[in-house]
Length: 172
Image 1 (cartoon, one colour):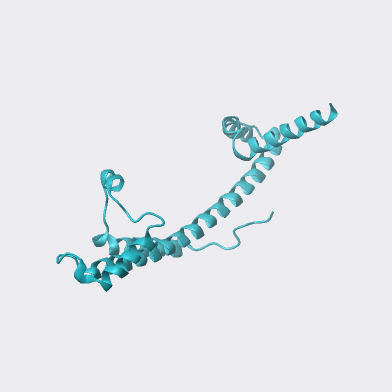
Image 2: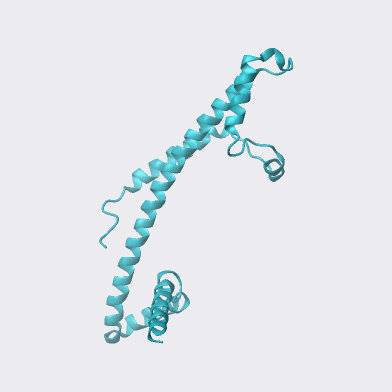
């Protein structure tokens, strides 16, 4: 598998994105709410599947405003439903950006580990001829001891063990 990251956004572009995101957050801050855990758990919210119910009640209330208490204005519910929909659009846009950034960062992480593995392999070859390099590589050896059975290495070893078990079972 070749390189994943073929071109990099400049630091200036990434810094500008941070500024834009922070400006967006600051722009919205006066309208944001911060619910307590009690409010989150104790409040009745429009849970999944309830939006249709709420919109139906809203339509009925708008057709029958005289059936509501004098303190209630059906336009308030319409306004909140529109606000809710607009917030959902902002959330989706944020999710899209988050996915783009996370996948790009994961691609960079994969490329980083490919290069690191290649560098380690080359350094391991030369460490027998270079005492200073051998001493420096001891710290790499310690890292490898600590993390030897994690991630892909563990998966690879498990797959190999499973293959051996399958072969042994077939022989019997």
